Picture 1 (spheres, one colour):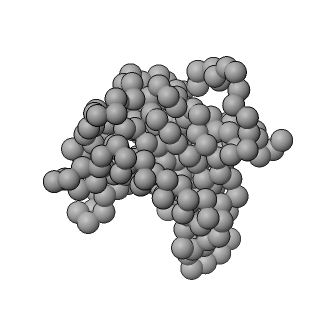
Picture 2: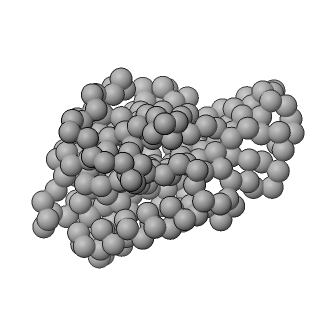
Length: 223
């Protein structure tokens, strides 16, 4: 029951859960205009600058500053200000749009294959620094964004990993919209003092709540 509640909090159902007759009601998060999933032959484009996807109001709701993107990293990343004195609160958000190479974008078949590979790998071990995820499941709805209406398929995993002395929790939602695979990840930890080994990973619920807020904008940016 606890797993079911944690999963459905972000619109997820466990892999073995039967389909329900009705869809969950709208999220409490703000609605954002989104487009229908594409037809089989459609080729969608990713945003030119993923760091401009999130509005100021959305970034304010999740406590994030301006997004930054390294030239060699496909992800745009947003971070909060943890402050100068304990307790520290670390939050990181990343959004990646994967549609193949600029000269040769994914076909629908290739995008489906890429999505399936990512899901298989993430269900086993989503991080080199941690083990198998403690939560995983199929996304039916995330925030106000629904499978079959705004995106084609999706999955979610939550896991805890350790880098050095620091332990962090991470939630990752991977959505496929036509020929584009979108990955939204939230990670972080709370550190009560100055010792990183005392860090407390963010919970699955915290990660899901942040993903709920940004998902509609992230999906709508693919056109």
